[in-house]
Amino acid sequence: MEEEQQQRPEAGQHGPLAGFTVGVTAARRADELGALLQRRGAAVLHAPALRIVPLADDGELLAATKEIIDQAPDIVVATTAIGFRGWVEAADGWGFGEQLLGRLRNVELLARGPKVKGAIRAAGLTEEWSPSSESMAEVLDRLLEEGVDGRRIAVQLHGEPLPGFVESLRAAGAEVVPVPVYRWMPPEDLGPVDRLLDAVVSRSVDALTFTSAPAAASLISRAEHRGLLGDLLAALGHDVVPACVGPVTALPLQALGVDTIQPERFRLGPLVQLLCQELPSRARALPIAGHRVEIRGHAVLVDGALKPVPPAGMSLLRALSRRPGWVVARAELLRALPGAGRDEHAVETAMARLRTALGAPKLIQTVVKRGYRLALDPAADTKYADV
Image 1 (tube, helix red, strand yellow):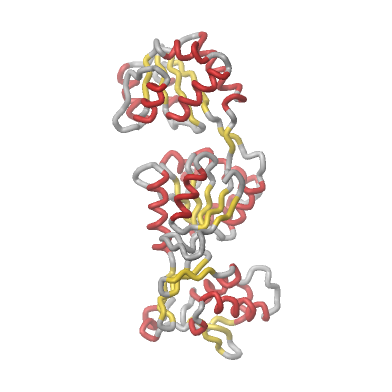
Image 2 (cartoon, one colour):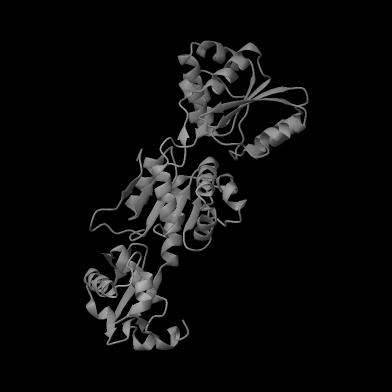
């Protein structure tokens, strides 16, 4: 998934996300997230909203490494396993590996969690302490409780800022040396991101996932540059579910008033499971002509059977479902068809294809000289009379 892709599950596969399209903005671990979504039936539209600066080419990381070797810090805070390993490997590639490890052996080394502890020990080092909660807030509390005034603290970052962490240490009198492992930059090719933005604005995706704050900020920045920020926020506020892996990732969106959904455990698996609950719960289900019809993003479930529907057909079906059982005029349906112009024959063509795709022609009735209606079951008339 290095480039923008739209992938749909194979025919016959059926999962809780069948019929839904999910946008993926991640650059790192995008393959893993995409595979988890596809295994549950989703179509995946991937466009990395940022790129990672290769460590070997990162002048800022090299400068920070030399600074630490030249003047040893009192404390080093390691935040991620992949970031710590990458830092050591990059230093080794520059010819400074042993010097860096020598420095780290003689400082107070703090690890954010068990994975980081494993990376530290694999490098032949030993951590001084690690919080049981894997929380940077607990690390900060320990440092402030010990007292940091006049102490030199190196903090290994990982592509995104740690809100309030560095600022709190500096306010308490510490000298902080940021170690910017895996810095994020805008993607070199903006085409995939622009197409993903267009898909969100046009409601062609049902959910948009974020696994880092920089990805969210990058997408927002691109939308603002294109004059689409208002449209993006409107889509994420009503029709497209913004799903973030955790609260830090959600900050750029929440700062603009976008409510996001987040799993209790900040991992990819729980994020996907949350979407498996959220998206089906938002799907419109109607009793029509003796069938149970559930309208999803790019497909329809008819009595539990997945029926892929062309985009024009989905536009017509959504227009009909806004007033189930009521006649919708051809002129109104024509307005729902993107790019159809003024030719009402386009409605008839799209309607014929929709009926074929649904496999149950009686779901939609033709009302001569008036339009079309969903054949809502009589027992449901009262329930939907005021829709």
